[in-house]
Length: 374
Image (cartoon, rainbow, N blue to C red; front, side, top):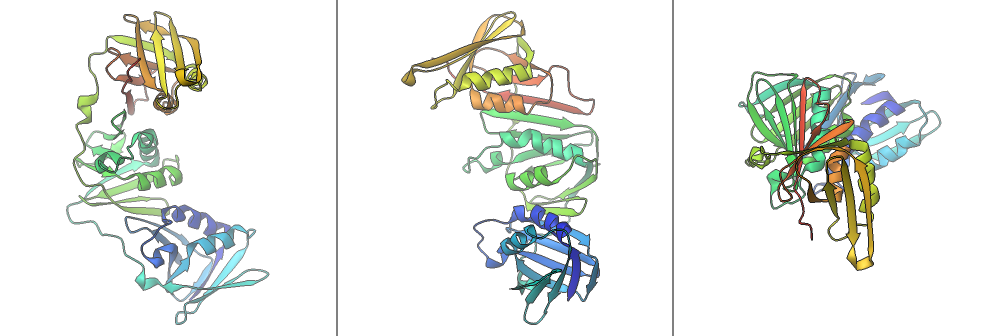
């Protein structure tokens, strides 16, 4: 079989799916892209067994059909060096020799039998499906991914919990120190179900999906999920288990309310955090009626810093400590001018929400556990 394809078009699709390929594959063939030619349509697949990603597009011309696996690293490295031009792939179905013919030369490699490439799991009969705009999925993943855990002893916490009802879809992530809950009501579904999306496919979606309101089709059963959008399809194995009752961690009695410019606070934290202890990253917030004092110190190096920021505050004066890295992460992932911090006391979690409210279709809440102040 052979086909002609644009070098830049092929490279863009290969770079997208190559993110799936692991650096430590158990099967040698997984270091390859699977090329599947059917008519004028070329489908390229990359996989690490747990997650598989495919992309399909029309080539300029083609004869014959079939499957072949081609070394991913070598192919991407070759294509990066080509200016935009048509490339001809001549593939010998018997010897699996692949000749890539450019305007000025020829590059020859040997492929592997495409029939040996592992096939992704098919969804069972008891599957649920939901249709949404790409913006819903992109925002849901982007807002929550940073809060997932890396603790492999609690695998359910390492993914994003996706809870779907007839009226909304909710994305939740937590590492026991911070928690993010992001909800949207602009979805189409008749189902009510939930699943836990692993970090790797979530990262793929964050990097590949575009905020262009294309339709995304999501289907899943108890073990696997498929996500289709544009020219791409992701098939992944889900994390099995029951997600903890995250609602119980969100405080309902928060008599203290701090309203402050998000960017001013974030920049202040970045400056003062330089002087915090490298072991704890503890930063202290001292709050009065119209002023927040941010301070940090590292006794071992005899350094300290404090800075004042204007704010609005309702409630009794208080001091509370947070891990600076986590607090900066939360503020950086909120898209608002002013942020409202709801507090109980120095031992209970604070919640962070946009002061101006989210859009009519979305709701976002972020939570951070405090640290003990010495």
